Each structure stands twice: as structure tokens, then as C-alpha cells.
Length: 176
Image 1 (tube, rainbow, N blue to C red):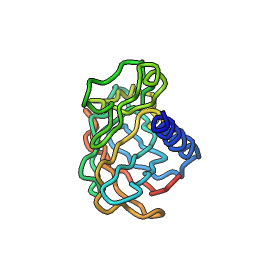
Image 2: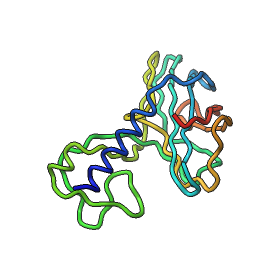
Image 3: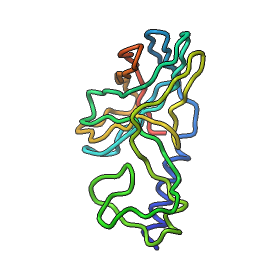
Image 4: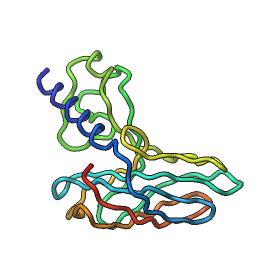
């Protein structure tokens, strides 16, 4: 129970720490405009971080975010944060979005309120609409950063869209 409390506290601190407004650093391509891009780096080598931004589709056709790339992370995935539905993962299986060592919750009741992350294949971006990738929602997961970028640095993310193709974005590194 103590471990579960610590996990929930860590997740809550992660979400609350990310709730300030980022500076605007953008990229654009094929009717897709990306704004407010920023990255929270891993806190130690080999750890994971996340990227957040707003995608606006100024075009007349729907588009879809299919993936992302970053040269400072060994794996980059598009994720969403979800609140558990009470379903327990199978014994020995990691909770969604987790890898390596993990803790199994003690009960389905404990799972019901837990937040976890899971990869998504794509995010639709409707014509004339926008999608915000933010803490507690959709985000770019930057997995296994051998040398995490320093706070204050600017890094490059490449977003891959179904129609617009690759859109390169400069993102500020912050520890918010």
C-alpha cells in the first residue's frame, strides 16, 4: 500500500509540475502549424521524458499525426495518459506505458484511479481544428535518453503526418 501511495504521489507531482504556459517555438508544413513546443527531459541518463505542443490544421483537409522522431531519444512514441478502469494487468505484464521494473497494484480498486500511459497509433487533426499534446493527455514520449538535453537548450522534434509529411519543430527544454 505504501508503494502504491508513492506511485500515485509521483504521478500527481508530475502532472501538477507541468501546468504552466510554455513559450511559443513553432514549425509549419502542409497546412499544419505547431506551436508552444517544449520538452521535459529525462532526469537521468537512460530515462524517459515527454514532449508537449499544440497542432493546428489550417488546411481544408483532415490530417493525422502518425509519429515523431528525436535524435536525443532512442525511442519516440505518441502516447496518451489514461485513468485506469479497474482492470488488472496479467501477472508479470507491465501496466500500460511502462517498461522494465514495475509494481503490480494490490487490487482492482487500486487500479481504478491510477493514471497510466499507453502508445497510440495516431492522433487525428481535423481541418480547421487543433489538438493539444499536454501533460495528462496526448504527448510525445521520449524513451531512453542516453544524454538528456540540458534545461534551457532547444532541441529538434520531427512530427510525421499522414498528409503534411514531416514537420520539424524546435522545442525548448524545461523541467516544469
